[in-house]
Image (cartoon, rainbow, N blue to C red; front, side):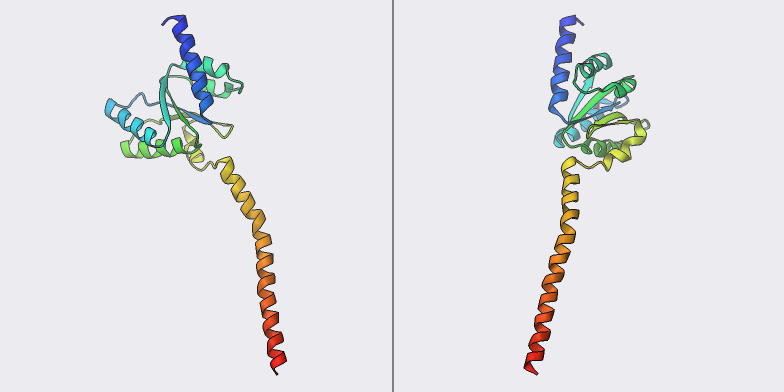
Length: 173
């Protein structure tokens, strides 16, 4: 491959990585053509981009980024595919479900960069499935902060109607 072609691929990988908030490094090398097509189809339906990459070109694209991805470089061995998504846990769910459906003998997950954190190794799959987005966490915090205020208001409103009922009964006597 010519140096110009490599440069163009690296630039394209850089822009593609910049378009998505999260990415997974996977190994789909052991899959036959039919299973690979099925996986691509599933990813497409979930708005996940699946790209097969050369490790050296991906590493150069990661090195050119403003984020320090050096923790992922050790995972760039063998055959590598990128699963790019804007939803942090969607690729993890696809990997789990696909591995169960195909009874895959080897792990597909190598590493992931999700919610500005690194997850290295296949044992991180269950953790990645439960990762919540920043917006989900903010919503939970707001809900927790609103809960005590709602309880106080509710207690005051119900207490007021109880006192009103007691006063009305006393005035009728």
